[in-house]
Image (cartoon, rainbow, N blue to C red; front, side, top):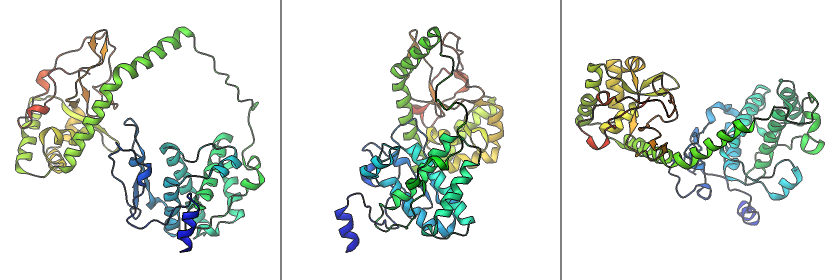
Length: 382
């Protein structure tokens, strides 16, 4: 009853989440956001529901990187960070932060520092966040100051650590994190010694107007002329990814994979590739599954059996999506198609200047017999 009254009296206090509570509360999710929401009890939390820009990467929180003894309490404070808002009065008192909530990137960086601090506390024998004393705060601040980082970076880290205490105060069941000493004593004494003249003056030579003018024009043209194509390609990629995720394993799917890949393999043609952090240039499993209607497992098994990862690295080719290209350069399409792995460069997909002639390579891209409507275009570009 006390907790319920506290929450009702103070709108900034958040209730204690249940194991099946969503990681991101509905009020922070935009109407058009389709990313899946993790559960509070999951060990990996996706920040996709907070990511609305299609060009942004999807970030995740791996709670297994937090020491087991502190994981339950850190999990609780992280949930408040994601869903809570700092009180305006607290923001005014601090002076160095003018937002009640951070964006996804800043939130991710803050969480990284919290995880580092939790691991350090665990090495000091601290098993509860409430056991973190003033001596612990000062020792960790000294560790940051002596790490060789710049004064600005150390300032940012200490601010994020202060947020850990501040957001804990917004939980209906706070962990009891103590207030960092620099909140009362001032933060300057906890920072590395200032280097240089400290004026903050930008001493970089200014760019010549003859250089900056074309660059500004190019950036404006990039947004105005090509953003429609890029966003359309992003939506198509998400549609294809969702199709693959829901695809069932069938005999027809395996037959379609063979009908598409075997002619490419036997003719020596390039294979549709993507870039993997683990394997480098490799076969675009999701792309092949999407255009053939097969499941990802079928494509992966077939590719493994025939050693297509190594073969694709030797004969990489683009993975064109069926998205109309409307942007123009001097009256010509700015590219002949948009790849599945748009924004990643494979060895044979580096951009050419607009004036460079483009070759036809229709023989390299046979149409899948099962899905003629999703076949690649007749022309390709490097």
